[in-house]
Image 1 (cartoon, helix red, strand yellow):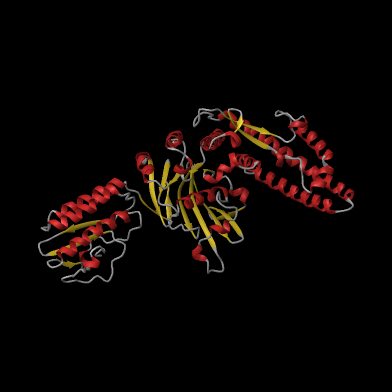
Image 2: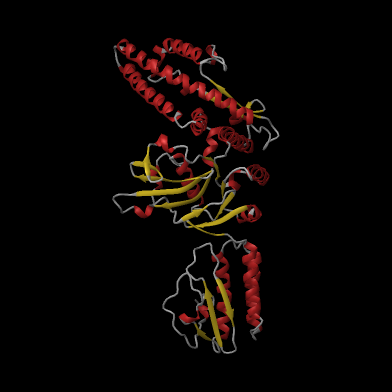
Length: 504
């Protein structure tokens, strides 16, 4: 399963298209530029929801704040074997709709066209948070194997909501016995759907346990166990659906008065727990932060393996802010494990990670929501240093050479991690050249001096060819963002205060 391209309109700050490679894709950029937004868009396409917010209204672009009908479109092309599909999610303030090859589909029919799993900081709630987070983890995995299970979950939750509303009314009523008959009716429905949920979760947990790489990221043993709230009343892991229903029914009858007193349901799969253990201890209570991260990534990889065992392919795997959640050792083991198996999207703010894996991954830079090409930092430094020093040799003023050299030294001392910063340093350096040589230099920058002028996105490099003739200074610029209003300038004079300003 591969996503070959993804387009975004009106979704957070995203612009344009992200073209995707089959293996590891690394999105690199500074904070708040849109790396996670692209991962969120991919997750949305697969799961119809966000891993960052429960309200997709928050994902609508702020640029639409003055529009009455705000909407966002996220679309992509999915390849499974030789079959290609175009899928799309449309978001409005109070609704969302789904399309496959241009045809609108229900959420159940849409799910399964692109399956996506994510490892991110928000997902740490699976090992650190409430039992509901772990139940949700199991349910998502089951739905990825059988999308119709979503109907079972939805129906159980609907019945539970109705029952809780009735229990609340009974709690506040002076004639509580009047509610018993109708409560028993709701309980009968809970029995049916509850049994199906329990069976599916137990079976899925056993599948996870079989493929769990318990010591891949930790020296300690990581294990999981599904624990029903009915265990203490005689329910065994291997119990049949009929046995479950019998025990469940008996406990619902016994706990009727307690549920009325509490005003909400006290018995059922919504009270179950998935124990995540490290050396037989609860990782949420006794595991370190690193061990908790190891447990989560181990669970994620187990889900990927279970999926592969059923469909003989892997879902798309997202790893958000990898350097914030994992140390270098775990990053290396994780990428080594997934390489060659599945399509992976990794976001990071550290160029060093992208540089380290550039030979094994497709690396892109993200700036203000747009996608650009990735080049190694050292390539930037070497390219601009060589240009500066070569041209400085042609100058006769030693003092200028010294000042230019000080700027090239900055390229080594400072973290220059994108094209803009490198270009800025170069412009500062040549500003000094203009200041010292202005009496003899004539800036000839007519439109016809620009060869192959094209616009370029942030993240792409501007290719400057700079020459210093004896009397004139000609600047040929290739691939520059905009060229307009260019006039011949004779005998430019640069004041002391302007020495450090770029001459362009």
